[in-house]
Image (cartoon, rainbow, N blue to C red; front, side):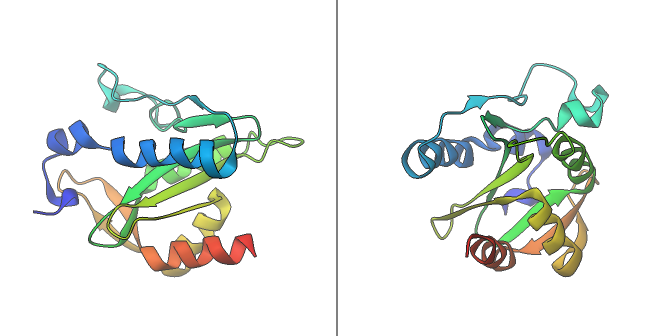
Length: 158
């Protein structure tokens, strides 16, 4: 059974661990930048009762940006919940001066590749490539082929 088709409680137990560890290595070894854990990391709270903007606080804070970490696997589909996108766009609006807003770090555990790109680039790719889908519990998400995300990141970096 693929990760996305597993029961939410089972997904919740492993969600993000590998991708977040990969980001921390990337920040230290590639970006050579400091970071702090910022967002909620499986707190013992009823997440559904929290406002979306709190629930979807970006995972990390760096001196020049927030970082949202997203993993993807064997199905090669980048999945971003619709309400999470809206919340991240709100966080992105906190940009000012040299602070760049929200960046995505994407870790592909199946192909062992990674990229770092602005939320607004992800939003553009969603507008061009996404299909709507839903997790088993009914939460809708934008489904984008992984290659579209990585191509956009490489084009952005050029």
